[in-house]
Amino acid sequence: MPDGDDGTTPAGATTGSRPNRRKVREGMVVSDKMTATVVVAVVERVRHPRYGKTVQRTKRLYVHDAEGSARVGDRVRVVETRPLSKLKRWRVAEIVERAR
Image (cartoon, rainbow, N blue to C red; front, side):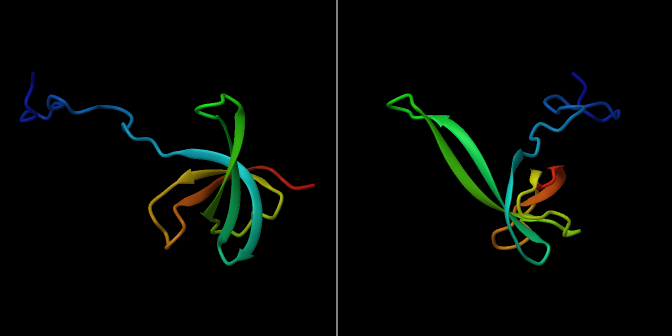
């Protein structure tokens, strides 16, 4: 195995895509009252561990919206990012569907 001295990849290192990709979620904008921030409700369906019934869990994510283009009712795709404030760890990747 090369050790990396000649510019090749050292043993154990990965090439190509990064091993830890950013999380991507899709949800509905429920509030746009803040500046450059929207609140997105992400609904997750999980099976109850004991009873097996499908249960909906809702998470409210504080999402950075630099352009301020997202409005209440829009369906948006959000991507995990570095901490931007005390609560913001996500940013708007794209607006999937506009509110009617």
